Image (tube, rainbow, N blue to C red; front, side, top):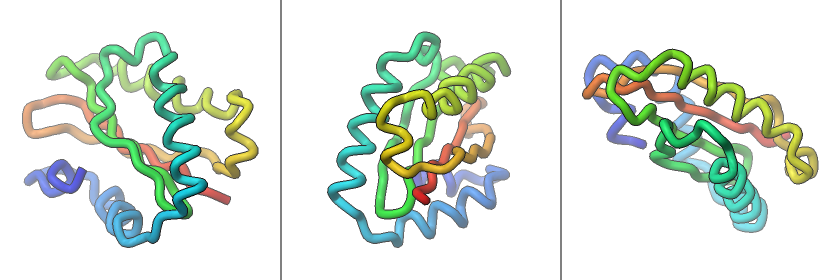
Length: 125
């Protein structure tokens, strides 16, 4: 994650700032372990996520950070739209409300090799 955000020319400045806050945050092991497991299971069950690689997924005390990259270089915008659909459908999961997660936020960029990257944050209420 840190390497990606340091890439020259990467326009994800707000993502860098939020990542710095995330990286400095203490981990709530109980909440983070639970939500990370649920997110991994959820993403594994989604159709269409195969074109999207989850590079990193981690939670701390008040937020989770997911970096997803479209696998083929110069992937289609439809892949980014599909990721958004998958992420926003999280709220239909039984565990989502009890995990006290707010509406997700996403930031889009490009990796050095031309792949589309999506930085997603899930904030705890």
